[in-house]
Image (tube, rainbow, N blue to C red; front, top):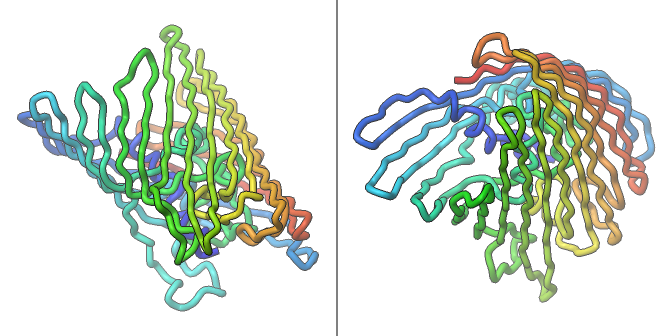
Length: 393
């Protein structure tokens, strides 16, 4: 569960650059060189009513109120760029914290209580780009399912807080639709090449530090990930974006080869204020929470998920309907994040976003999260109401 807490802190940091790029403050720009900063702070009041059944078949019902971080952790980022003839050099680093670090879990050790803030760095990379494309060197988020999470309409909101994952009392962020429609693209040391856009298409391919299946496992090759994006506009008020991504890695432990692979996909269509999104993924040998970061090492484990959303924007108002579901088929009955056997995780949500002034957004949200793991006798029905604010610059 500790790994899940750490995961929840870093869930959507890769989206912050996308959110804050347009709002970045230019600190210096002269002679082809620029330096800028961007930031985000959010905080939510949430109330969760949980009806659950544990692995012993016992019912456990409770209600919990929190004041905490939403799906995006608070952060500050710094960007540098320098034009050298026909080559551009860039760098980005981002530092982010959890606001949910107070004395909220009496079962924690004394060292885990108080205001630790969990300051962390998950983006620290350089880019070299030109007419031939771009090379990224350093630590950034993975390509597999990257566009799925970037396309989530709840990125500025709250999303699911399954008590099964320890998210209600967790000291970090909520989960959005992680494990209820997509897996999280964990940040990794990587070397990634992106092509220039060609007729709306843009391809990214990367070699990344592999995930260990065990302390003594052998990975002869790095992990390979790729993403193909397509963007087009029909007119001034309508556009379409589609994508497909993939991942592959092989490990060997005790002379047994274990293969992990996955594919993600999706499409978004926007016209006259209406946004419709459908995305999904399918994987083998991977977990349903963070993909390769929770390798379980057997080919008998398969995970599939999908997310469908509709959003309508009218002036300063945005309304969102969402449903996501992930299903894990575990023919080998190996324990995966506390579950033995098959499991279904789903989240149904409705949200309202109101722009108060540019850079300040109020959020009102309701999510119903359900877990059904009949082989383990585990079940959960979680109703969460949340209200919060997001401030960006």
